[in-house]
Length: 545
Image (cartoon, rainbow, N blue to C red; front, side, top):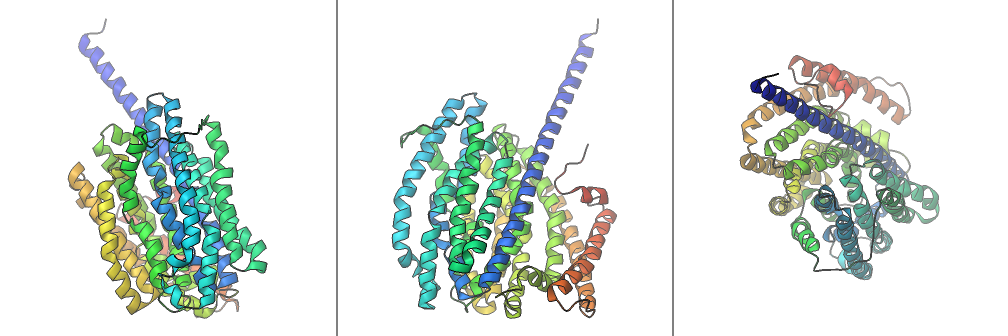
């Protein structure tokens, strides 16, 4: 018979193995979820880029495109203030709480009440927004431009507005799937949305111009957020019952944690609003140029920042419930470093190849060489803030997981408000490129403040020096890669292999970027930042211990 000490040792060993297996299982789950979301975001950004290419071909950098881009101003404000964009942050912890308690009926009761109340709010504010659209838009610089452009903006706004109801419903339907760690159908939502816009432009554009894209927005929003997501929720035995109770305790809790998000001006939301507003006072085509540049930069942010934020948030919420703050910090740092390893060098190389990238993506149809010259400096300015934009998404997630939404709201609102003079001055001095510089500066400030506060409160500053040292090495290596890329680009520009500008641009991009990336990954190996094999395997795969 084994002695007690031997039995205790065996039990401890079993506990360690069990805990290790559990941790590995969670790591695998996060990796799988991240891969799914990265694939989704990547494909959605590709379709989004096809959307922008189609828009550029039909509208170019014209006043019509200014009207189309500006038409999203009121819809995005409405979506923001009715909390449509925050459901994944505020509703998932509420819903998960009842799932953990094995009380799905109560979870669906909360779902029914919140979706009914929100729908009623949209039923009131949507007609008012449609009616008052000319008044709200008159507060922008578009009012002082061509009356036909202003009238077109009003008409497009009224077409796009009802799509916000579909986004709201879809946010709930996707949130319940995320709570059950179901990511596939939600991953299809942006793909369907972008395809709807593209098809609207292709089939309706020849007859209705940019208005065809607006109808595509409405159709794509319905398909991606309702038609595709409803079967996924029904498969989880969704139980919707009409319920409208403002006195429900969970509704009160939802309002309590959501109001700071709604009242606050998050930098992602502010950036979308500010560039449309301040660009509307610049020369014709500036809104469109800023939009093309921002959408191109957001491919990187979406694939690396948005995908990681969506995938690891449910697990972060679970760690928060367990009060495992050290593990939350470790997970946050791990994600930031891994994103930096890929996003920073890619941003740097894209800066060196900005003219060729714009030529490949947009220069055809009504998007002329002059349009390219306007857009290149704007893209370069936005790329400076690509990494900050991505990790800014992650830095707020630990606070949201702990349902502490007030502090991030105060910080993001303060940074947003303080950035307004910067947007104003830089847009006047640098044109549309100044909007990118202001956005990059504001995103960087918000990330640094949030990360520092989290570290001070929950013990992350002890590892901050190590993280800063890693990031410094990554930046220096990326700059080295960018300089090599730029030098090769200048040499390749003298070799004319085709009279077709796009073919020539593709040749330059491939010939300059591959050696630059090879140098970056080689230096990663030399400075022990990342093994080449791990770089090839991809972002966010945890190493075996």
